Length: 212
Image (tube, rainbow, N blue to C red; front, side, top):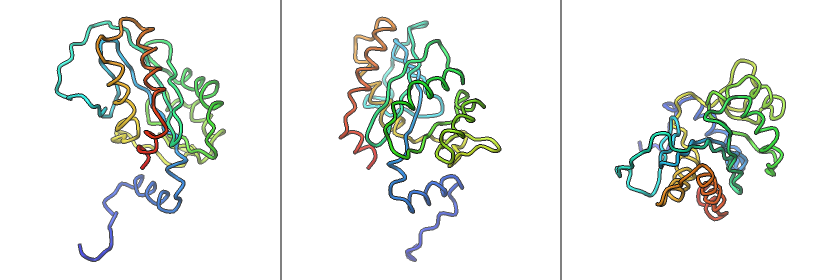
């Protein structure tokens, strides 16, 4: 204290690696395209593993969840200038094959970011050998995620990380607060329509403030 020197020795190695990249390249943060999935239920419940969703509503407010309410798995990608999505997965769960098909046929052909860095967390579909092989071939040293021996990831996304990405402190909470304005969605189609409308309502000004 008082020396003017900041010590980072206590930080995990993956955080130090990110810090040095950001410090040495002022375009690093703007190159990252973050991605995430969440399960939205018509009852008002949102499933998002290993993260906290920050919303505008009272977190202690009681919401009664209806068993067997309609639900949908929603995927989005977000950069400093664009939101890509939503993409709705068919079925109750998402597997590696579905996730890879979405990347190949839907998302990556739409990305207009130059020299972007892809981020994904360690969810099981992302850990699929076929997904990692595709990223190694398509984005060598330009993807961040859970990696195995021989993978060509730029950085590893550690297990049980706090996942403080734009989804966790902004997007999912923003969408949840709008989708679940009463009356709640009555069926799957209405749930999808609300989710699509509210995700597409994110503006450039919002993204600029998120990245600041």
